[in-house]
Image 1 (spheres, rainbow, N blue to C red):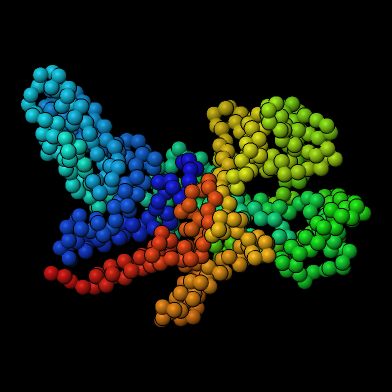
Image 2: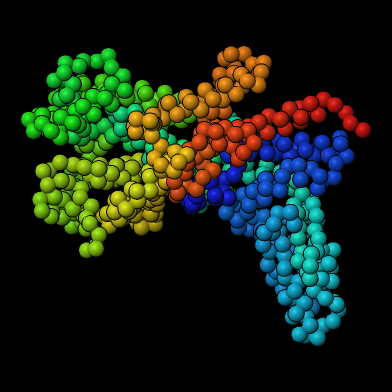
Length: 556
């Protein structure tokens, strides 16, 4: 499994309950064929050539064992047909490719031309042209349990074949084992994948509201988790929140100075943080007391720890509200979780001559042309690199992860490359017998822009709170439902609006190229006629309604 553009990759088009839904719709479409007397091609056009192409690609070599993939089955069928057509006159191994235009079919075999040339070179004149050879091969194609719906010859000898809908449905049923509304795949599909993966994503900061910048990490990270779980991988979802460091010394000191004791919300904490940052930059005495508060926090001072925990709990509640809206559940492992592990990890790197002192700081040099990874500051304090190294060590040695995936913006790519390189040099990623190696991936993404191509901010220039964005999407969907005169109850309508709004936000993100920036637009993502989740939900509802009504009627 590779991480390309989330919106552009062909893998994993069928997720969750939609996989079984595809099979069910296929079964119902067969019933409709009989009831309405429709030809296969008519129904196939209704299902859409894009959907068929996606399903064919999904069932191809990337997702099936090599001998049982659709490509392998098609190639075997053509080899048998060619062997029968040639009567053993020459030995051949045909090639098959996907049709570049789905309208022509699903797969194409162009070997008739090269086979004909070889026959002609040998003086064999049994076939008058490459096309006549291709037509004979088509006649000899085995039935293969109704694999092909159509086989035809185009041009000088291009053979195009289309899969039958029942055959595709049968293969989906063979691969997918549906339980609890989520798709899981046969063991043969996932043998090459690790048994346990850790996915690090979302990662907001304590005392700050989650903003639109956290949107992509949260959605893409959860998508990766669900994809891996569908293949039987045990996934550990970790939320690496920023809950430690100098900023808390500033905030706690500011709260003490102003006698602010509880009763505040996340917005208050964010405002207090901004005030404390101004004081830290301008007031040397406040700066010194803030640094002393950090020392107290790290040494476990009971008063400071109590205040810190209260701040974390307020933030955590706000985060959980957002995760609940998005249908996401993570295990929080903040920076503070690794505080006791950092000295152990850094000592290991020093003992292995990977981390060395430079100008008072502890650094890891990869090469002379790149700046070092500073894993301990010159004043003895720890930083992001210290925590990330400790976290990676803990995930590999204690959690026994075989695959660790970090989902952050693409600007952090070089930082994680340096962390990964240090882990590799330290030998953390290879088992003692060198038979297993832990895989590390940084899944980067572009930023979210407004409709004018600028950073998505409020009118005052602040980052847009993620909760406000989600509520706005939900409110717009509710307004649309109310305008359409729905007969749903108030509660059902609000729940429908929530589902539509959250689906719209997720789909708007995932349909874009993961690696590039994208412009966020409420109007585009809620368009009933565009490439949106709202359109897909509407279409699914209409199709389901038609199929349900059709089941109750008899057509002659």
